[in-house]
Image 1 (cartoon, helix red, strand yellow):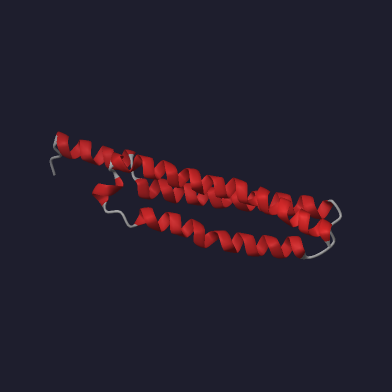
Image 2 (cartoon, rainbow, N blue to C red; image 1 turned 180 degrees about the vertical axis):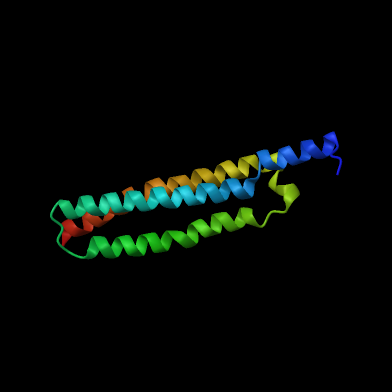
Length: 123
């Protein structure tokens, strides 16, 4: 099969910029970072003398709760067809979604830890 320059350029564009794969990668790494931060903060709370099972329960609930949110981000981009997956006009929407995803992945464990510590100090 002979490839034309136009065909080769289209293939390289699709390979170079596939919003579906890139969002899938961001979701996977975001889940890893989120889980690692949750574990770190849970262990830190336990080492500070919290002797309840609340940090473990929170870890399970929060990791399980973030998965549907991440899946929503991934599904929005996974449903694109091949032409749309390489469309550079989607770059602003992609940047917005990745910024929101990473804000949640990093900010949510910190925020929730502060909330749980405040609740524990009250009780």
